[in-house]
Each structure stands twice: as structure tokens, then as C-alpha cells.
Image (cartoon, rainbow, N blue to C red; front, side, top):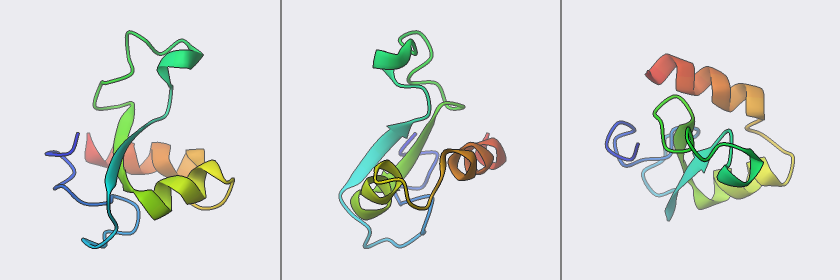
Length: 72
């Protein structure tokens, strides 16, 4: 996923948005064990964008799903 996403945050695109994290739409703990690391389930986000998502702000789940669809 990091290679596909050019080792940058795929939400803001800022190369300084670090450290990078792989965000999964369907997490292992939510039944995604067999699909957790597939390209259509994961996207690279920087820490600030990842934290913002988990705080209920932008990017939304729908935003990320749309961005992933454009990448695969």
C-alpha cells in the first residue's frame, strides 16, 4: 500500500504529513482478517489525517472509500 500510494499521505498529499500509517476501511477486529491488507481495503495516511479521521472529522469513511477506488 505504501508503494502504491507513493509513500505519502493520500488524503492531503503533503510529503511532510508523517509518520505514515496504513488505514484499513475494514479492520481485522471488525471481521476483516482475510481482507485487511488488500489494496481495495487500505490507504496510506499521515498521522494528522489518520487521527482526524478517527476523531470523526475529515476524511470521512466515504471519502476514503472513494479515494481508494480511484487508486485501484
